[in-house]
Length: 88
Image (cartoon, rainbow, N blue to C red; front, side):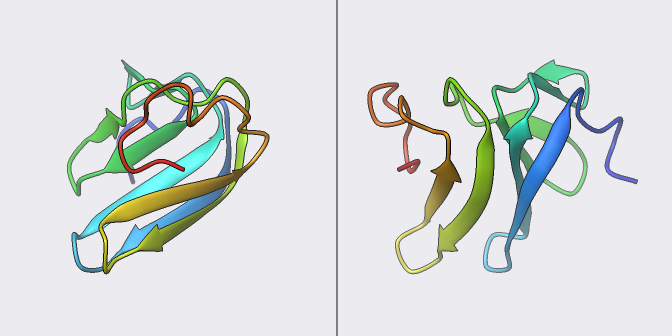
């Protein structure tokens, strides 16, 4: 099991083999009992927020391992304006 999970719908998962992390995106406001705006990362022990997430749901995730970046698609019109590090 991955902790207590999300409080909404997970629509996308991306595995970062280099970093050993699982990223989740969707339409949720919390992960593992902590606030997480539609994107979260599983460390192997706990879910964590990636900071201020997009205003609407994430439908797909992709990882650029060469540059250490996470990309999201779907209904994410405010992601760049929110100043998300590595989220574009």
